[in-house]
Length: 217
Image 1 (cartoon, rainbow, N blue to C red):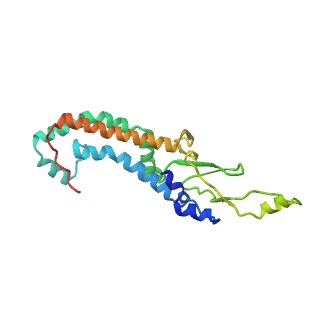
Image 2: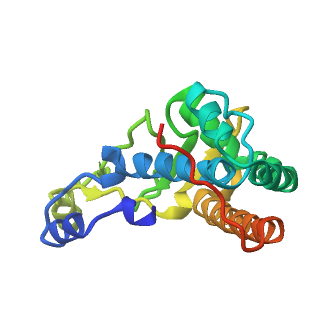
Image 3: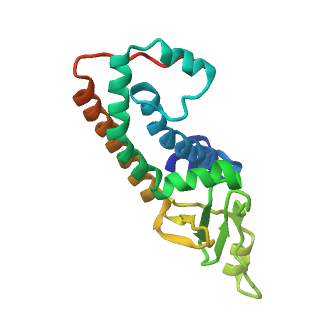
């Protein structure tokens, strides 16, 4: 996601003196953030469908599929589900798991705020539905100062965003203290831990036995 804050093409254009809009301002950053939250949160669901006995397996197609599975495998799936549920429940309570639900099912956009300090000390705030300016002007009163007169003719400078400028917003509309990038890195680590725990449980429950892949519905 940090790469979404800029792009090689934008960097090359700006080095030549051109003023271009930041990719994250054009929606790329927010789309990548939404995708990350959705995909990471789907990991426990995928694990349950493949290895366990997901309580949401209620459709007619799923019932037909389950009816063809041996009782021994169904028993192993139930054992896996019972052992995995505790870890799954903990993962669902993580801050970014809840943020994903809010983004996809309540607000429609990530609850994230960008707070950027420009080159001249001006602070700009915005978010996925509150675009920030892509450039900033330095207010100069030149009068008879030739150096300031020259500076006043310069092009506006791009407003650059850093990963540390982004914070998740709470339900009370307050910025959390932890930078968004660090929260995402922590969330990714928790996702990897969940996968490893699922592998360990799967090995203990199934040993050398295989499980039937779920149908494509």
